Length: 204
Image 1 (spheres, rainbow, N blue to C red):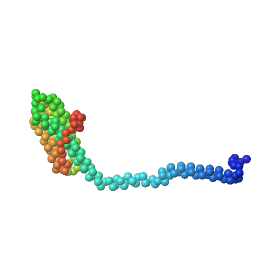
Image 2 (spheres, rainbow, N blue to C red):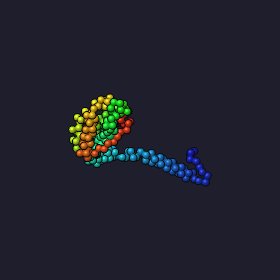
Image 3 (spheres, rainbow, N blue to C red):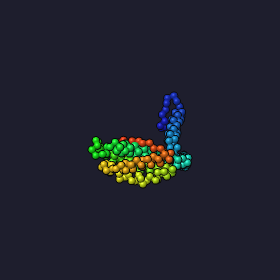
Image 4 (cartoon, rainbow, N blue to C red):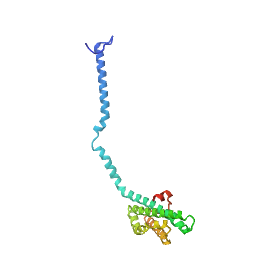
């Protein structure tokens, strides 16, 4: 006995053909759906994935040097500007106002801030010097300042304890003037930017 159902009024052979046609259609649809999902992976050439990055790198290489130099100048200016701002705001200005003198009102606070500014300025100038290495002209202009910047390292303690002299303050000013002059000569002018107290506290 056949398993194919019989519909009254319709020949048995016709019903069987309809059922077989439906089953065949479902099988084809299922195969197409599965094959469509996986076909992009299997048919894509192995070298196609690697080709795109190679082209991008080749096209970007002519501007790499110029971009690095521009970035170096930008970072140099940012660090030098903060060093200049910290030096004036927390060292030079209070010194000229007599805040570091014994008996001066707010002396203790002024000395603490000056000490922090001394460390901050030294760190920012060292960073600016490192940034300058990314630009040949700027690096050449900054090179003579290395010794002067290094001499600032031990002055922070003197500022914090009230032992800094007028020559120590002048040393900070001299190095700031030098870094600004170097920036101007290399097309990277520096303008003072006063750091926040949080930046001062964390050393920038």
